[in-house]
Length: 296
Image (cartoon, rainbow, N blue to C red; front, top):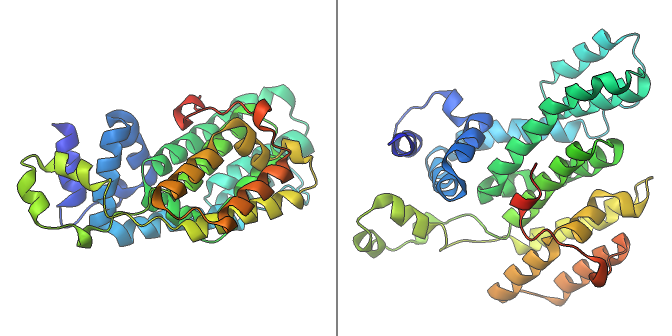
């Protein structure tokens, strides 16, 4: 009953409070109602509130991307000054960079470990949202700023749970592009006559009339390779290396493109180039199989 009420609010109600379109609220709804219902909920929300969601998530994306080379350099007299600068941006990424500054520059030591909990939980929430929403995946993967922010964030932070959360977001964003956005204008009216249950119809619509942006996805794979090669840290300790060797990212993309009949020589070259850059060896790979197995 609660799910159906929320669904109608997001898809039918003419004017919504901003809180109902907040990414944290929507991520919590996905957690509460499960992945399948979450896909239906987010798909309907994007269909009815596309501009509002693009604006809300776009602000979050921009704030993360702009701080990709943020406050790890420079100096502050005390932690209060650092807090004031970071929080003026109101961004999640400033939290992560702030933690890096606290540990490396102020020598706060193990007692600061508890402060990692918030950014890790927020990253996990963002990953869950992107995981069920191809629209969100395409938005965050438009351009390279967000991917660069994830690459840099992984490089400068050593907390294992934070790194795992970054891997989850990158994985969800890249694989989300393979699902594409539903194009409801292409759905024939006769489908409405076949399904008496409207929510069941919405689930069917999730899997038809989709338009994955494979060309852009391959561009992102090439960018991931190039950005990884320019890092100062070891290539085998990079975000790209973890995505290639510890997840089934490339296999998922290959299978999706092959199924769609668009697996080109350019795509295979991109996959091979990334594997070579990260030192990938098939016999040593232990792919996780699914994103849910990575989540902590």
